[in-house]
Amino acid sequence: MRCDDEYSPLLTQEGWSRHEKIAEGIFSRSGRGGQSHTTMNFDSFIGNRKIIDRLRAKLREGRFPHGLIFSGPAGVGKHTAALMIAKALNCTQATAPDDFCDRCPSCRKIEAGTHPDVMMTNVEEDASQIKIAQVRQILSMLDLQPLEGRNKVFIIDPADMMNAEAANALLKGLEEPPENSYFILITVNVHELLLTVRSRSQVYNFTPLALDELRQHGVSDDLVLRWSEGSIGHARSLDVARLKTERELMLDFLETVVTSTEEQFQDLLGASSDLGRAKQGFEERMKILAVLLADVLYLKEGVDNKLVNQDLRDRLAQVAQRASADRIVKMADFLGFIESSLKSHVNRQMLTDMLVITGNEILNDFLTESR
Image 1: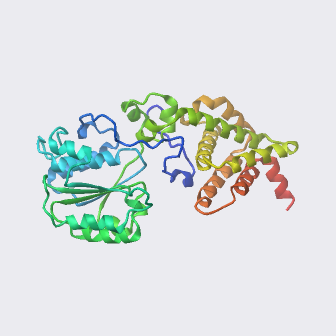
Image 2: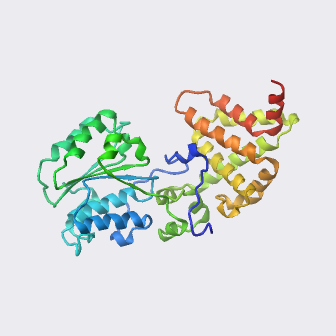
Image 3: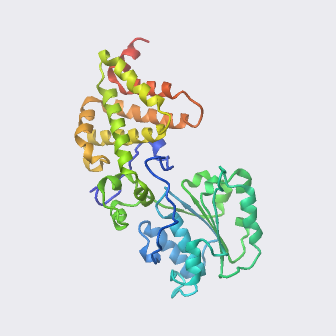
């Protein structure tokens, strides 16, 4: 398998692979606003072609489901696909039931977010959840006839941010939707949604884009490609300069952890202290460390083509020579524990102290023998 032809996951450890939130700092938050609109259709959609083909087949057959869930990593086309479906259900100049023109007033209004029959629901400003009042607004529109188009489309993104009351209220709309009403729920993890919501919807699981598919989007920088996690959204918002700076810090940290001797114990504690005291970017640095550890394991397993940080191969190879695979795996496992611990108030300094002890062979063996 060539790395040029297929996306290789960055985070091999289960806990970090679930972490789909865009890292603050490395990935800037960039919206759709301000970008010029290029005419599109289903054929121009890049990646996840099987999903698009299945959706088009249902449009052609006239049996399109009234409840859809688009699940998968951020930035792989879920929201774009939802807009395309809304356009196909309302386009006035489409030449086939499974397509849209992207030029008629209906398609343009949907793209601009101004179509009265296509409602976008997300987390309101200064709120942390989608509230029941927002869902009730959707429900109040169900029995009304479309104002301009043929169908009403309700897109909830991110659907996993609905609070319990909102999610339960949505069930009423999913149970018996009017013939001309469709729900599209977008989430990074379908299992974050209520089972009752999932059972009333058809689930489509979007996957990361292959490297060649990212290149079709115009991404050419190799470092950006490999750090994008198969997400065009990540690729376009990646702050390369900041990434390189933070990556250098974390590689220095990793080298200190695996190479320090008993005489360098103070250096080891100093590295832990510097990392633990960081007021900003702690989670971001943990994520970078997880990717570096995965690269070290790839080198130890002889699958160099999967390396994310190809430009750091020589330094990573030195780490791979000094640290056992078991030690690297234990560090990666502890990063998963750190991720789960950050959801509550914890002493970060204590966590980083445990991390360096876990990663340093000599210190770990000494403490084990002294028990």
